[in-house]
Image (tube, rainbow over all chains, first blue to last red; front, side, top):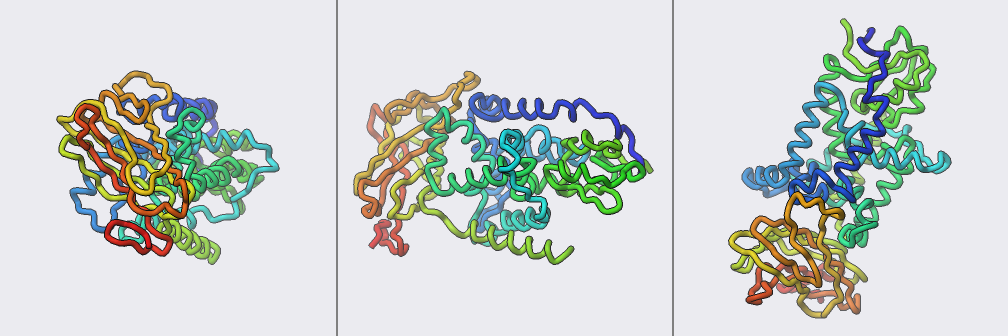
Length: 278
Length: 167
């Protein structure tokens, strides 16, 4: 199963951390650059990517559609992300998302003895267990985890709290402190900094489905089995623990994002981004 | 799919269900419309009495034809200490006009402005933190109400009368 262009380490792999920093600059305080075009200042409001697809008990079709218009930039963001993922892989998650990018970069600042290895947890089971409740609990009237536990609300306010009393107020409540704890433990303290993305992010859950859906025909991170010697170096560095080694390394497209870390570390140059050559 | 996957799936569902069903009671969010006819709030917000601090966020859109300055006041019994702050960009790049907020007054509101105001409430006596408080928006020139956002404090046993007072 050879690939095309597998060995070339592209610009998006080499400059990924700079692209993440650019995403942080565009979305997060103190600049919150993109939000200011729509009189917003965070992902809450018209940029909310997490709430418009939630159908609450008693909601009419009109109210549901009104939610889409209220969060119109969030709708554009999510639909755009799903479409690009379908064809090219999860570049939003790996390169542009300021939320996951922050936790990943932040995790590099912590010493390794403080890191927690979550790779023993079957990520897709937890992710879709959480995601099914995320979708169904409001629908049947149990309640919602949508806003109460939100990484897209928490991370921008971590940045903003140093400057703004309003952002600080977010953490003066129990749910805000729990969110902060989740970001700290599953983000900054996680090995690779992406455990929150991999386990609890509903946008990541949707994006992973899109990634898996067209994984046979579109460009994805793939292993060339004829080159792989099953050394396992890629397994240790994968931030989403998406690689499994038996006889050869295999990539789980339900967890993989094209960060390229495995590609960079592979001594056999057996991992690359491309299509399957038939 | 192995047993480990099934166990983790069930655990994730169980914990998420608990998270969905349980409310911490020290925070709430309300959505409102600021209007010359007194405004409209989407739903009253319920808080649990007995806490030493509450953080409440009120988001509101200014509806035409209203424009002007609005004073914000937390009204109700018992009287509570509170602080208001308006969410706004830390570095204002000036792409859009934003209302100013100073000394609990929103200046220069115009139709379609969208506001997010945080209210941190500290009851003077936390056991007395029950009853009904209202975040009220008044036009500074006419003193007419533009929006009244009720905050209902429920008792620990969740018992309350029609006005939301705990017993």
